[in-house]
Image (cartoon, rainbow, N blue to C red; front, side):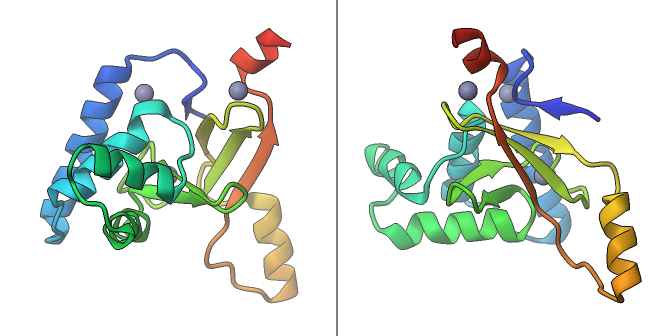
Length: 158
Ligand SMILES: [Zn+2]
Ligand SMILES: [Zn+2]
Ligand SMILES: [Zn+2]
């Protein structure tokens, strides 16, 4: 299981490679990766932290990229719909996907103190859940696992 976010890593390169991957993916699919959409993704990637739509809107406003809520919402919609970002229901906030373009069932580890979020790749599909679903005759279309706890740096502080 590979995870990004709680481990130290080359963060400049992480932002750059993610933006490059999404850019390529958009071109491949004929999607418009507009400056606002790109900026919103960069903002999400900057901290590996879940951000609410209003926090994102504040930054866009500061940067003169748009001050109307629909601007931020539409960009977030686009990113989530295409799998470049995920919505964390628990926090009503958004994070950038750490492996965009891959079909995956994300598993999130959310720090309850600092809101740092790490996305762990859950392999293909959750085996036990799949098994239970198939026994119940249920077809799973979307699984989101959100685990809440303390990240390594908050654990070190306590
Ligand atoms: Zn990073
Ligand atoms: Zn993801
Ligand atoms: Zn934390």
